[in-house]
Image (cartoon, rainbow, N blue to C red):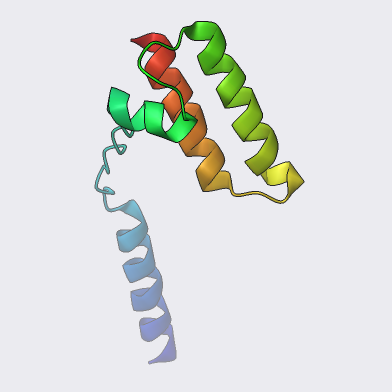
Length: 87
């Protein structure tokens, strides 16, 4: 009886292992509006690429995770810089 249960358990494990896994689509990248990106970096509407980069550098140096800051804040600051420099 124990052999039958062992074989049944192994067959069940094998059957579960061979089942197709559902594909989970990757999450879309987060988006920021231009106004929100400017507010995060603290630059006005007339700021050029050099001012945006300078504001980004200043903020990241203050909140970088290697210096005890937050990874989430650094991610949002990088996203704001990318949004403004791309557009």
